[in-house]
Image: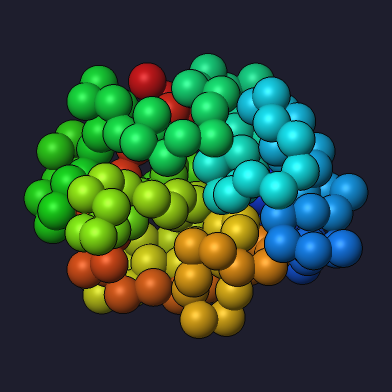
Length: 152
């Protein structure tokens, strides 16, 4: 399952918004998968769309905090709760200004200091309001939590 999921999210790397912020054919498919139209932030919709392609049970939500359910958390604030994050788990980034997690994407590789990710609605700078699907390298301390929906 994890390998199939990885193939799905890798196939989306390079998708870019078209015709304005949070718009474009593929972006609108991500948003439609959670019942939203064009113009909404779509990082969580991207995660949901990918999970739907391989039939993984998940929140089917565009609201990032819905992916932080206690039952699915395996890592939080530097502490491994259940296991080391693996391919296809989702990472969440906390935004103090918003007092909640507000960006999400897939863990592709969990390394000692770095996390290799695939995430939507980001850019080269790692913004949560970016322009596409990117494969990124983030420092591990940026990750607030990781959830496992594949095996739980």
